[in-house]
Amino acid sequence: MTDQTNLKTLKVNRKADLVEAPGQTPKAIRISGVSVENSEVENLWFGRVHTGPGEISAAHHHGEAETGGHVLKGRGFIRYGERYETIVYLEEGDFVYVPPFVPHIEGNASKTQELVWLTTRTPENIVVNLENEDIADITIDYRD
Image 1: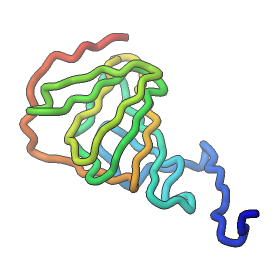
Image 2: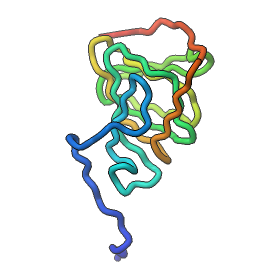
Image 3: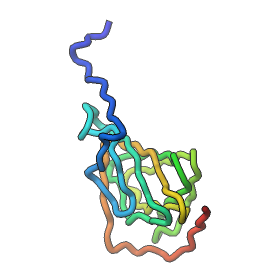
Image 4: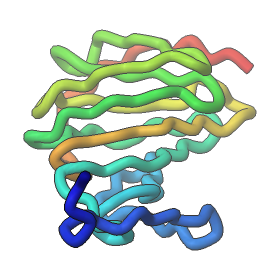
């Protein structure tokens, strides 16, 4: 039998009570679902990321955190690599892994619908926004 005295408390965080995560990037609004701010969690952040129609985030990385993403709603893309010239498109239902310290840009590949990701990070929601990046001018395949 498990010693019940040292167990953490199961916690439900209701949709109406969720707030923006402390780490933010312009045009990629993070909402904490399970985080150190609202649960007894250690080494985990799990939430939603919202990007409006046609919006593209600023360049950033997540430090030592490993990131898993799932496109819950919409069609998105991630740019990375030399001058952010490599682009991968993700459709609703797709998953992506972003390794630690990989600079990237996230975007909404629709000009009419919101993009919503479910995202998890360990050890936490580390966000390092990058300034003065040399970003290539590439054509984005927008679809509605």
